[in-house]
Amino acid sequence: MGQGRPIRDRYAVRARMYRESRMLVLSRKVGEKILIGDNISVTVVRVGPGVVRLGVEAPQNMTILREEIKADANSSAIQPRPSAI
Image (cartoon, rainbow, N blue to C red):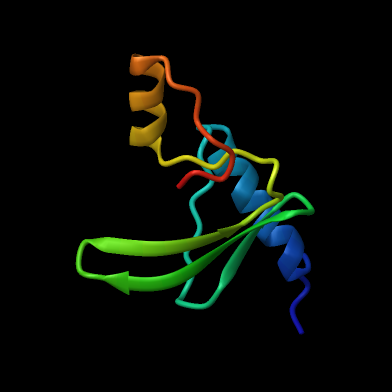
């Protein structure tokens, strides 16, 4: 094999480059997961024209919101429920 870094290290370097701009950009296929920390995973469930369906697995005590729901909750002073999607 080549003399380069192990694959894992190359991905870490790429991830660091995107993190400098505060966003990590990844490509995934249907059924593939992205792991966040030790207890959160995001799975690509379906890809269609103009829409991507994601599945999020996280602890029940963690609040998960779509951005527009959070903005609406903040503007109307409603407290979001845990795991509201």
